[in-house]
Amino acid sequence: MPEKFCGVSVNEAVLSPLLPGGGEVTVREDGAPDPGLMCDVLVDGNRVLDATVREVDAPLPPEDWDTALSLYSKAERRAVPFSGAAVIGADGARVEARCDNSANSEFLLINVGLQGDHVEKSEEAVADVERFLNDFVSGMTRKLGCTS
Image 1 (cartoon, rainbow, N blue to C red):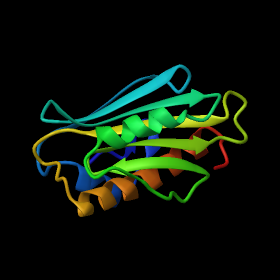
Image 2 (image 1 turned 90 degrees about the vertical axis):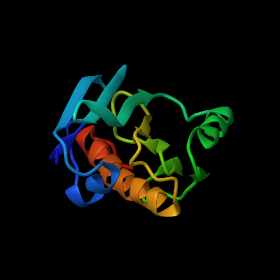
Image 3 (image 1 turned 90 degrees about the horizontal axis):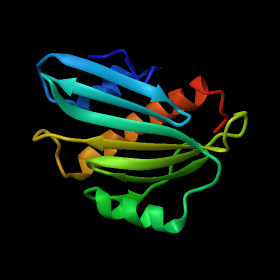
Image 4 (image 1 turned 60 degrees about the vertical axis):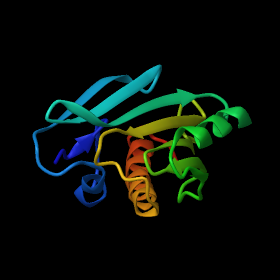
């Protein structure tokens, strides 16, 4: 199990439910939040989790949230424990976190996707994605000097 994802420490208890059991786990990372950080978790060479992190200057327009609602299974706008907004589904999410202290941008835009046969389209899977995001987004905002 990787200790870090996108350069952020992630609790194994919130990451492991998103990954299939067994196999060799590899993490790839490319870029930076400005213009865009891309990260993948692969199991036996197959991508099972990906994320993009970008710094943006303005909140997402409503149509981008509508698009997110159609992208993910069981997707809904959900409350988050940080200053921001999120559409979270069983197989991915779009998150906007306010970045009040960042010298670069006002918001972080984070998109997360899950791939593979192990991905369940259930309410329990939504809860797993939500727990992962709460940990991951909090870590990313701290890493980038945001207060959200």
